[in-house]
Structures are given as structure tokens and as C-alpha cells.
Image 1: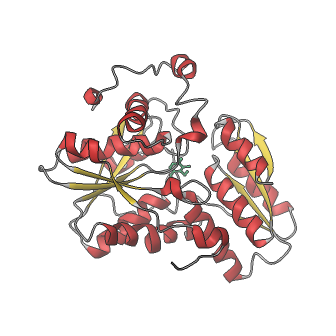
Image 2: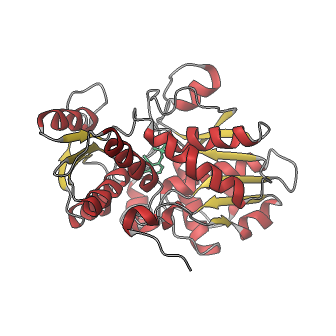
Length: 331
Ligand code: PMP
């Protein structure tokens, strides 16, 4: 067996998992790209490694430098590991409404964590603007800027998308995913369309996000709200802009929570909320396609990060998200 190097060498080449119980129930094949198996535990490892590589190549990040980022958690976790591997400092700005597990991990990994109030993007105190300000004021620092930095999308165009295509032997009818920065969806969609224009590319959007209305009718309308972390956005980022997306569908938190617990009980897969929401989207999309259709999605991160929330009965009750019977009727 060949060996690989440290954090950077362990990112990517994740399995493509057939969700066999779900596929049997739907008579369509649902495939999940196991991004929770990356060394930092999420799909954001790819974007972080790509952003750091790009900054080193450009010469903006040099020994003794600092990586600064505003993040819902996973990008920060990945950047903290990349920084440790390559000898940089890492400052992470995170809103205070994210799961405590992610904030704890950032601290354990040695990042300088700045928790800020969760406020709207238009407020200068929003984590995004605070991170930019810190980077500007810190000598030798780069701002990773995952939302606008196209090294994010490129990671998925050059690795995630081609891996999916190869792993399904070129037999794929559709790809569907939710978007945070949009890097994963736009990058994978671009890679798949380049290989076969007939692959249907679809956004599944949580409530509280404007992307569904953007894809459907070109507006930025927001309806409702969501507790699922890492996805949904109210503006069009450079990483999402111009993405090759054929259509969009909406998924409610309740459905994502039901699916998270169903996948744990019936597939033996312990996943985060965005992964579960993606699987709901994949299942619903598959049911609109002929029997035997093959639909791929992203299993973004694992459930450990949300044990005190999505997998905690009291938390679910407080958020009006109690589980129903545990079967697939919610689809
Ligand atoms: N799921 C989770 C848990 C995430 O942290 C992210 C990243 N924000 C995503 C999905 C979405 O990925 P992307 O930023 O590539 O759209």
C-alpha cells in the first residue's frame, strides 16, 4: 500500500457510499460522498487545503504567517489542522450560535478562537467582517475568505467532482447538494457537466436561505428559518455565482432531523444535519426520476459535532423538532 503525508496527504479520496437500505426502499440508487471521513472530519478540508496551497503559491502566506478566517466551524477546524501541519498561526472568528462541539475542537486544535455574536451579514460585527478586519491588522496574515476565494470551488472541481464521476463509473443521473459558500455544489456541478452535460445538477436549500428563490426565479427571497449549520445563505458569493445548476428544491429541518436519525438506525451512518438534509434532497429528487436512477450527494460531516443538538432529545423538543415514528413516511 502506498503511504501519504500528514494532513494534506489525507484530504480527499473518500469513499462513495451506497445507502443500500434507502436505495432499496426508493428503488433508486442514492450515493453519498463520505466527506466526514476527511482528516478534519468534513468536506471543508478540501477547500482549506486548496486555499492554503493557493496562498503559498502566490507568496501571500510565508513561514511565520497567520491564517485568519470567519467560519461556522468546519472551515476553521480544517484551517487549524493545515496551519499546524505547515507551521502557521491560525485565528478563527466564529458566531456564538454554532454547536459547542465545534468551538471546543477549534480550541483543542490550538486555534486562537474569537467567538462573536451571531448577527446579520449587514452588521459590521458579523463574523465575516470581523475576520477580514483582524487579517488586515495582523502582520503576515492572510484572510482565507472561503466565500469569495475561488480556490474553494476549484478544490471540488478538481477533486470531489472527478472522484465522484470515477467512483460511479460514469453512471450518474443527478447530483444534489445544499450550499454554504457554494464551493462544493458549484465545483462538483462544473466537473460533472464537463464530463456529461446530461447529469442533472440540483440545489437543495434549507429554509432561511435565499438560494432556492435565486435558482428558481432569479430573486433573493427568504422564507422561514433553519437550525442546520453550515448551509444556507442570503447572498450570492463568487463561489456560487455562475454555477451550473438546473433546478432547486427545499428541505425542512424536520425532514433533515428525521433522516439523520433514520440513517443512524438503518444505515449505521452517524452524520451531521447538512448531510442528512442532502440525503432528503437526494431521495426526493430520485423519486422524480425513473426507477433505477442514480443520484449522488455529499455527506458533509459526522454527527459527533452535533451530539448536544440534533441527537439530543431535549434540544430537539426545545426547537420543536421531535422525531415522529422513525420510518421514511416524512419523504
Ligand atoms: N455542511 C457543513 C456542515 C458545512 O460546514 C458546510 C460549509 N459551510 C457545508 C455543508 C457547505 O459547503 P460549501 O461551503 O462548500 O457550500
